[in-house]
Image (cartoon, rainbow, N blue to C red; front, side):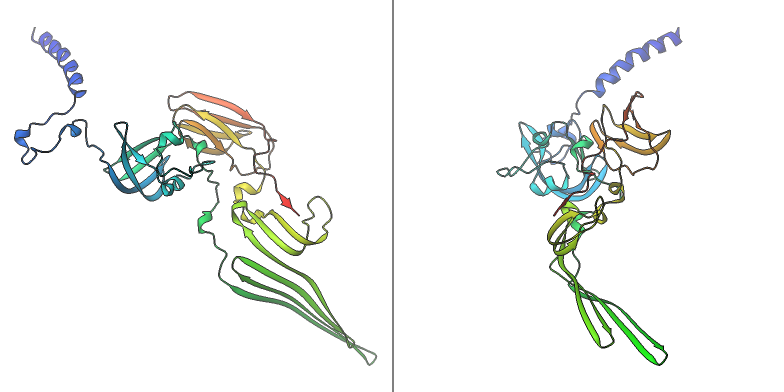
Length: 337
């Protein structure tokens, strides 16, 4: 009889605990000294967020992007971050431009799929969004903001050779000097190549080429003005006098120099995505819910289509195939002569 009473008591107690946990906190002001003028209702659901300026670590999809300053403002009764132009740039959104007349944006105005959370304990502003909304972070790439053109300098390279022969008392000599001079300043590089020859009292000075060039970092290209040659990839190389703007593969990260297709899909949850080819794992990444795109796969020597598997958080899997012969956007090499 006592055991039965205990079981009934537990059955009655558990629903009461669940209902109590869902209720808001209440405070007895008699035990809070000096709190007569303090509005305690804002604390009934936990530690509240106050309007004002904050400086905290910005985390986007779990990736820390450094410290940023932002403002929390009230909108329609809700407190939300006010996105300034500097914070907008720090988010590194793809194909997004700051409205000219705007001074403050909300996350919902950029994309309704963007979610945010401020952790006051860790002082971190966590932002979650579909991976496809972000600028791609190619493996092996460097931050373009940290790229500079170097310090002003003058460089002179030379190659010299002298030859003399004596045959039956006859002496013959040949002298050669090759020069490669460059002057670098204000982002430009001025080059001049020439050679000098002397033989049997005859001298000849030959100016080979003179040109100026500079890097166009945002386009991963080089602008060349003056004398030059075509690259000869498809046809014989020919000389020209004029200008040329062409892709410079030295500016591309290793994952973008070769050929590999682009992989796109949609994840329903925080998912793990794997890319395999002929049973070999080529790529693996964790993505938030929404659209995702991988276009930094390293090229492979093996042929065969790519098998993409999305491992959802609920245990389900989605698999699809990407043809290996698909040319990813931006993979072509461009040149304007």
